[in-house]
Image (cartoon, rainbow, N blue to C red; front, side, top):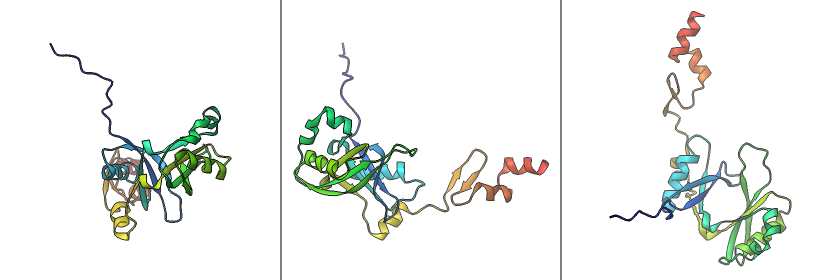
Length: 196
């Protein structure tokens, strides 16, 4: 007789937080997460999920295990978070300032030199006392796309000639639906508008 397999073992790949930069003068923003087996896989998956249509010039991925986050309420109830261990070095600091937008982004606001994750969190709290949440992670944990123009072009340039399917027709990225209607290129709609 075979023994039942344990359902408690986790079979998912590690989770990676994705940071996207929309333009060179904008901060990287935490836009969501992906599951991936290794750093290159994380970057490719992040591009496929978060950069298919919107503009971007850079992507970073950081394993969830390397990130320390806290809200003011969490620090009040668990001050030991400020003693979290970690490697000494450069840490990126992210802050969440508002819930007003439809997406609740965390903006990276700079870096600090810290003795560990808890020290970086303490410095983030001191630098940005009036925010909804802080996020810190070591520079060494970041996997990123190359900044050279060739990589930016091949990874992030819009596919202006790529076709896509809408309910009634195949369109081309870059052509507005109104333009297609006026040109009579939307089959179902063109026929119904002519009869009206």
